[in-house]
Length: 110
Image (cartoon, rainbow, N blue to C red; front, side):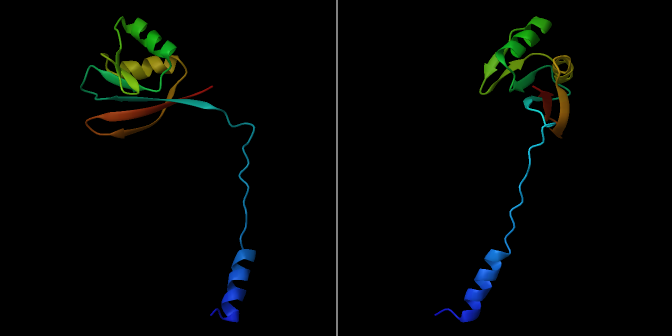
């Protein structure tokens, strides 16, 4: 059996709920993200999130065919060269993680 105080407490808790709207500002853009995985000591890079056109542009630039993998491609080029090439396509590095093998997250505004 509920005590009168527990009903009052539940009612007052419900009345104390505050809804905070999160506005989407018109200045916020839409972004595309690409992920590059590799080692600074290796000569190949795994790339995830690139469009078919972007993969073709990278393959053509380095005159190397890409090797499809799950959700991405491998290009036999050092990650630093891939990242610099993606920068020319409008991407910028926004984060990285790892030690021997690193994953760089790149972003560009659409």
